[in-house]
Image (cartoon, rainbow, N blue to C red):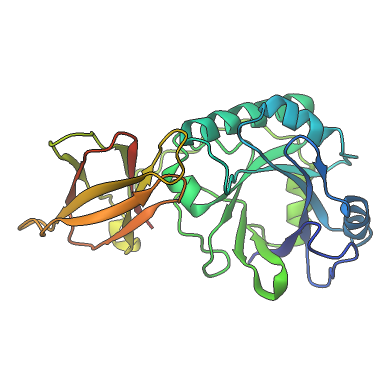
Length: 303
């Protein structure tokens, strides 16, 4: 079973509906100056309803993560059991994947040092998590956004919250707990750093850079002991071009199914435009990637 919740910002009412909910995440700040004008009212609504309450910050990646974190922390009135999250998105911002990764690492560490008694986690959509992130560092918890069946995000990493829909003009989430009491107990506990157990029985995934030039980069499609339980797999391509959000890289993609190579197809990847996805099948064993552009990354995912 899961616990249902929502996340709200200035687009939702201060007295948002709470019936049937166990938790809420409230937007607090964005960048270095914005503060959600409905923060106080939404916080009051959440507390009066007895909801586990989280607070999140939307970054401007080019700014100092420490300065933005301090701006965020300065608006909070934290109570025991409150959660904190970085909304790791940067739509329309001309920044590189490397900048986004560095911002995440610094922000999470700084906030944790300032609020050590609270769980500090990461919100990320599935695309950023599978194609931009490289270290799986999500702090104390992962809040993953993937529009699919509630409680079944298409990722391998353990998750705590899943944003699965925006139906009715509000983002809808579930938490991976049997009931609201279990969620409250977890939120109120003192977090400890743990290393996730090895998942030898899980399918694996590969990621890296595509070498620029005439020679192709060949990448194995991962297999594992529980491969049959994960019928879907995909290739994600991202173009990390500094300073030009309109730049386009062309990647020639060929797939080997264990018997022969498929004819190559050209895939266009736009800098700052998210991932270009190529579906793979259960019989595919490797892919060949060739591009003239520097800065193209790949990730092969099984789910």
